[in-house]
Structures are given as structure tokens and as C-alpha cells.
Image (cartoon, rainbow, N blue to C red; front, top):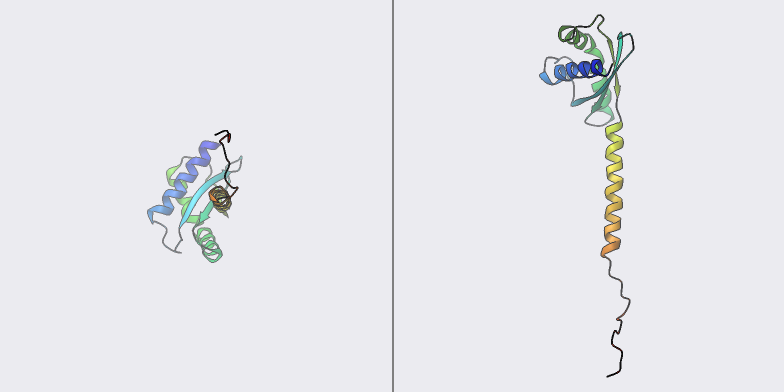
Length: 131
């Protein structure tokens, strides 16, 4: 199943980057994964979209409108008994990863600020005073 998922992901990614789908225009999108059903009749294509909520919604709508063309590309490039019906879902793992990185960087900056502060604890006399 993993090989089928990867093959479908490659075909969809290639079709999106080759520029064969121009109507409707699709924004900057990355196919992050594909999960096919056990009978290979359906596939969920996970995508991440560069931009805000509006770009995300527009891109998902454009992908849905281009579904037939993408399914045709899959039928041309992969020898499968059935061509899966595609459904597109936004993959928020990239957003979550960026948020985690942001939190780590913030924590690192806070720690560095703490480490570089100078604390005046006075001077310590290390001599015995027996001079």
C-alpha cells in the first residue's frame, strides 16, 4: 500500500509542478502525502499551501475542480485496476512544525539572555591574608 500511495503522490505532484493544470489557477502547493483505501477506489491527498486562510481555501477549491484531470494523469502513468477518486485535505503538520520551531527558538533566545546576564556577586578574596 505504501508504494501505491507514494506512486500516486509522485504523479499528482508532477502534474501540479509541470503546469499542465492551469485552469483554475492553483497556488503554491506541496503534496505531503497520500492515503489510499484498501480497495484503491479512493485516495486522500494531503497538501500544504503557502499563504493564509484565503489562499488555502482557494487552492483546495481549485484542486477539487481539477480532480478529474489529476485522476486522468494517474490513469495514464500508473497501471491500476481502478483509478482512485481523489479528495484533497489540508495537512497542518507543516504549520505545527513551524510553530514548534518558533517555540524552541523563543526558548533558546530566553535561555541565551539568561546566560549572558552579568550578576554582580562581589569579589572573592582567594588570598589567605597571612602576608
